Image (cartoon, rainbow, N blue to C red):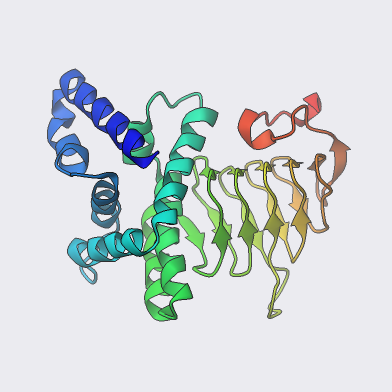
Length: 259
């Protein structure tokens, strides 16, 4: 899948170079100068993340090593690109997601931080988290677990706590918090099951579960478990209906009045 995906990206890049000459140099550096997807992605992320303390070369080496040791990460990245492409009507190419979507970028930076965390390199992982927050305005603790096919749409202001879990095929809008309820220790953050869509500005707090295929309305405050395949909204959130499909993350219908 990755080889076919890479061939499509290169084809889209060549088309963009012809269509928009002012972007030719940028697209060449990000895509066409590389021999595979992993090196291109490493270049893009390290260039965006670099600062005076941690240069792009050191970051690029970390990303490339992570992809070499954990090829499943690359498969997850492909799933994330396809998720955005399929769910966002404003997106008309894979290349747009790869080059321009900071929600996508933030998730991929988190994947590196998570691997560093699992390897016991906590200080470096926290540094990567900090840069992720500064650059993309998305704050994900390195210990948080995120599946594939995940879309952070617009993404600004998303916060994901240490013990949070986001399963495969989930869509999260801007300003969403997956947080705790105080200064308690241990397992204290939400678990988001497959197929869920979380509307803009929703706050999901505590060690609670948002069931498979559920929808959380924009601006809601969720403090209790949410059953599978229901729509919740309000402060505090209550069940107000049922999504019209099994996977709200895919249709992205945020109008809860239609449920």
